[in-house]
Image 1 (tube, rainbow, N blue to C red):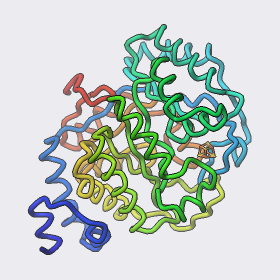
Image 2 (image 1 turned 90 degrees about the horizontal axis):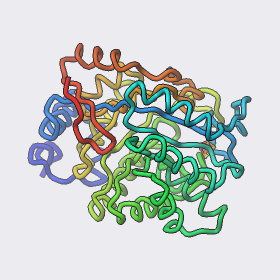
Image 3 (image 1 turned 45 degrees about the horizontal axis):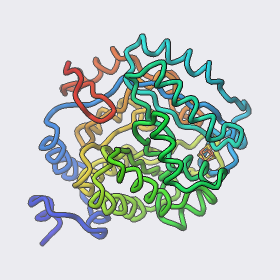
Image 4 (image 1 turned 90 degrees about the vertical axis):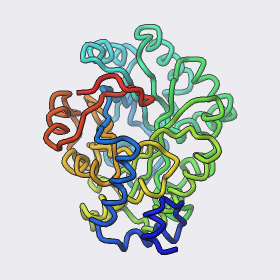
Length: 353
Ligand code: SF4
């Protein structure tokens, strides 16, 4: 069967197929990815009203691509207090947020108890707020620091109010690339194992992939296939998020930035390869909002959210520091001719515009 016949018949695609998809022209690829996206979600574009909080940028790890960590090129170390976080959320609740997204650097001073306490306080003050917190990399860091098993950390997180896991820390699963860009961080196997344990508790999570740095196309496809394999077992990933590498203020020194065509092809290929993950998110903070909207015609169906304040990608050059207003999101989606749907963190539809 040829690749086009496989696409026509919605056949499951192999590693070789995935690599060959990049050789198709953008419009052919877009046609098949968009058909798949429309079969799943019609003309809906999902977003949520959320607030990102990054409690500290002090990190014991040394990922080469990172511009956020104060140990690398960010000259302004900070750690928020619990009261600061609660005060931010008090304000954000008035903007209608339904989710708080808490991810951070690996700071030994903000240890496990510090996190568990703030999760409990958030749930106590704002019981309706969905808490999406701690990447698998942070869970691995905390488990190592406190000599606990992943199961023990996960159970404590759930006990203190964490509802779902963000998808960060996956970067690129290929071991050699990983060794080069983020040596010492959670391994690929550990990342997948932590999400498997999370899913086994009936909980959902996201999965990311950082692309556009030193990886090759085959590494992206391999990454997608490792996620697809786990998803066949657990069905716990609700979204896949290809994150475009930001090149400022870090130690990777990548000269060539990816073309828009390569970025859109990667979104389209994600949609086609990941036949068992419902949503493909074009996280506008890394792709720019304009390209994220174009990606909605190339397989993606979700824009993430309003964010309010973004520290991690903006430290590396993204224009996302101030988030995006709800009205702006709605207008942008409307001008693209698609239907804006506000969702909650687990993709229940809250409001169609
Ligand atoms: S990516 Fe995360 S773990 Fe790596 S250096 Fe930056 S803050 Fe630390």
